[in-house]
Length: 122
Image (cartoon, rainbow, N blue to C red; front, side, top):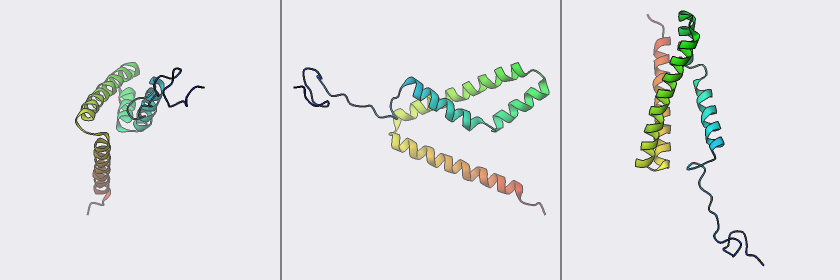
């Protein structure tokens, strides 16, 4: 009789250990998650509005698309390289905490900027 699925046996020499989801994932899962997250984050932001205006003003939408695409690829590359480096110098929990603090700080700063510009000038 063979052993339990997680115990070594002639049919199952060593139990498999699942890798943490944050460390590895299938190509499709990582790609789809990244695409969806970035796509939704970019909808309606300043970059999209700038591309819209540049396309309308220039009358050359293909060139605007190529330029905007290369710019997004380049800025994403900087983020990927920085993220890879940070993942090597600090633990994942600290990196998540730092990212959360950064997002809260940016939100507060942008909120303050919006509030200041909306105050009536008297």
